[in-house]
Image (cartoon, rainbow, N blue to C red; front, side, top):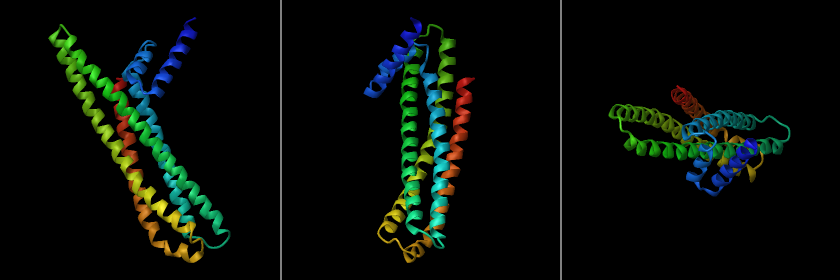
Length: 216
């Protein structure tokens, strides 16, 4: 019976999430003993994973673009198709990063709002002050992390824009001379990807620190 009840509540929670009813969604999880702080940690871990996957994807796209620029014979259309596929995968990876960061912000806003409201419920001034101090400390650590996440996220668009321009150009100019015309693009994209990966690694490290602080 308990198992069926939990399964039913999980189903309700998923349905409420899809319908956008966040307060009811969190309430459904709380009935299962899953608090907002638990959901926040879970979503930070998911966002972290998506950033790590994005790092790999953008590195793969750079490698494919480099292979195209250094084309020395064979089927140029196949190389172009591979680059186009990597570009599309990079777009999907970037969207996943954004979606997961948005979800982190959603539950964090709900958690901090609830925490702030509940400070007024304390009878003990000592416990209220301790809780308020913990809230401020958690918010500071969260802000450091989310800024790092958003900064890394912002680095993806220049790379995507450059890849899109090159893919579109090659689509209608699929020949060796067109590839040669793009030689100068490689260095810029390399720099952008290197910058992106560096920012992603910083965001991942900040996520680790925040997760540790929440679990402690």
